[in-house]
Length: 67
Image (cartoon, rainbow, N blue to C red):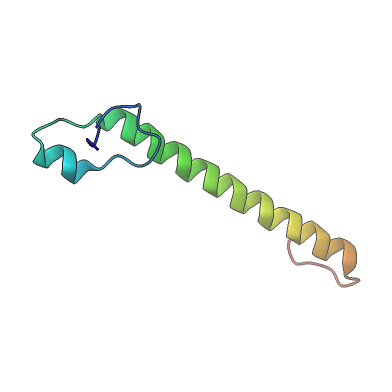
């Protein structure tokens, strides 16, 4: 199986294999993929945090310091 460097890869691009094969990886696609995964993960964590915080606020009688 030949390792590809383009945007047709569904998994993370193997930069070292691309460099060892004297191929130039698609750094723009890799950068966009990294930014997309980071923003999606942070958005998921923030929504999980705020949902757990709202559930804690609903289920507890004490005042939360954030509200």
